[in-house]
Length: 140
Image 1 (tube, rainbow, N blue to C red):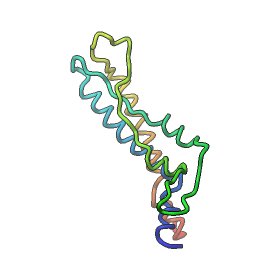
Image 2: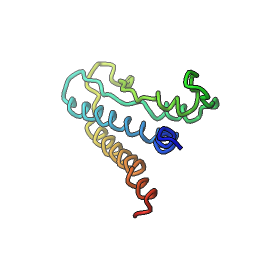
Image 3: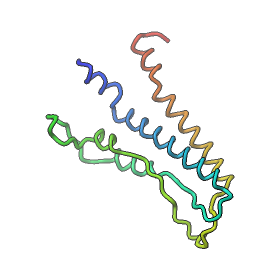
Image 4: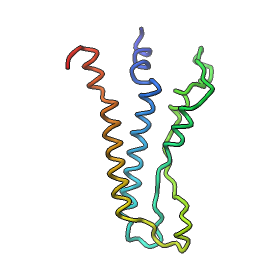
């Protein structure tokens, strides 16, 4: 097995890509939450959220899957879609805030920050290279 195949096998499985993309989303969500908290007293500020989970679900539920048999072919697999997946920051529509008033609730933002930290920590543990390395070398 050449180095590319080993790297692909170890680091580019669909599960590993999903976890890595989830970590990217968690980092972006942390930045959005921090921005919301820092602007809690700014009149007219609209809170930011991150869209990711629904895009990930659609990517994982893809029915079309294929194998790239030549480097010049377009890859249509779940892994290819996963590589292109990126979290997005957006301003949620809040009809209750039609006046343009600040819509940040500090308690909700702190709870979202704590939830995001738990998910991030879980993702880090899941993707830990040390566990993989110890299983390869048979050292615990």
